[in-house]
Length: 349
Length: 126
Picture 1: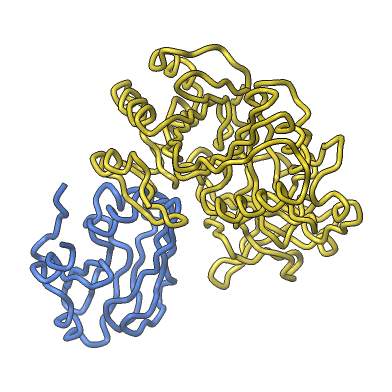
Picture 2: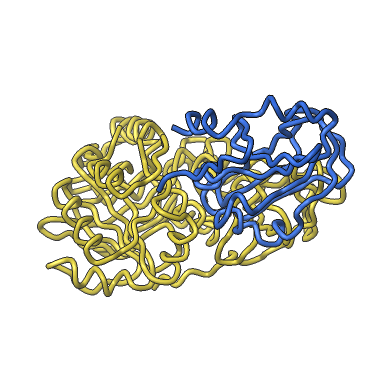
């Protein structure tokens, strides 16, 4: 599959890779430049492959509040990040739910999980008695993420209809939905619109000299701020308690997976490591005192820090209080630095 | 931008270049390789004195997002490594043919004859 911006990417000389069946730009000019531009100025990402579901009706908010463990009993115009759980309390996906009005919610899900998520949400909707409809509108929407400290300034110029908003707020206009959300840790916006609107917006951003950035930059940026990615830090074998997502379990009412979570004993945790020499990669072993205690779930070179960084999953029982770890790379072990905070604290507002 | 393929060098299918001087082969990665990899951020080289068979992995080149093995174009012994590249791997992006990685003393200098010439390598990059 291709997003409606595919031809634009080709014109810009993007390297294209397959991502969950989508032919997506991994990088345009230089991955490093794209990463630095987003941290220091502004970059734009085509993330139209992501899924959009709409929940509408009297019970729309109640239904979403039941569907996710995070609290969705929030004011209009708020966005909420949450994992989506099955009845065993395990993670089906992670998502952002946007409360557009009392009777209208948009849920944005990972491209690789659209069908699985839809089937699950559909089955919950069938099972329960909420007065609302659900519809998968993924094919109707394109989506751009404009990220970086200069995003607001640039969007003000480029969009005819731009009002001030705070972090994790959302606004639905006539032509588009805009939210101050993202996956880079920086200030930034995500703009959902029909294909024509988004292609047009992309072209305006190119004229404004905003650097197009690919999935490669997006991935490194999110590892730098330690945001989890489904299929890496999150999967259906794990609960939010295994993945540093305890903070998302805030619902004040009943939700899917609640019973299982109440008695769940977490065996794993995520840790943050960096290396002064070498670059940790997904699947590399993590050791403590010579014993393998886990593995790297995401690893990359961080151009902002000038060293290799990793998120890793380790066994709790082997690592209680442990701060000294080694990472094995091609048969050799390298001493890792242990981080209690994300590698980079993004400038999101 | 057209890929640079100097006429005086030998090449491998793994996108390495080799400069033959007597029975010494100086090895690096080609302009095509550096351009496909993107920003190179890490290079791991073997110890001096290591013995290699043809096609043995002898090191890695890493970009921000990828790890690529390096393979020995010939059999022989490592007699020199370019340590300055480990400190500044981005030099490979800037000038691939000036950024040699290792020098191999070939067990049999005739092995170099089996490497690709510039014209054959060029067709591989198209």
